[in-house]
Length: 262
Image: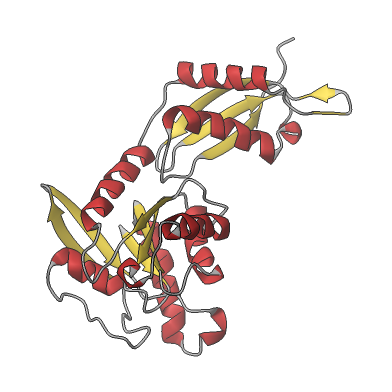
């Protein structure tokens, strides 16, 4: 698990709370964590390794090699991780900078949990969670599959839920779906919404199969790759998600051409 986020969002505090000891230096001076540190802990009989990372700053604030090094470390930590926990400061709200950090994990097909920290410090009414969730979904619209959790590293609020979430995302990252079932879903999807056509030529989808996990990766064989618009791939993805959920993980699609058998 890599814990990533802007400086001073509470990454080290969160790991310290999970470990139950002051293992990492926590300070109000943004950017105290200079290196990625591994912290292993056991929860309900399972071992988890958390990688603490130096917070990513906005590009214009990078004045020293150390800061550049921090960014490289964050990327390296994300690449090593199975699940990435993106920590957002509830008192600041979700920002474009959070979206950039989330994008690093999304592009690498990692399991994703958005943990909104310092939730105990926010004035709430019955609509607060709903509004905040909508804002997160809006700013992180490229990853609608991400799980969102409201926590407090200081009080320990909902931290057991974080482990439940991690287990679920890990399971979804490693899920395999049988070829027969996938092709049934695809046939039904095609029957419900006709594939696009261009200049009289219509897209034909022949076959779909899962070829990898972490992230779950699917190959779709079609008659013409050019006709397989992004929106239709997303439509097929949504149909697969309707059946299997795949919460917290991106799905990867590879489109291959196969010559028509006619």
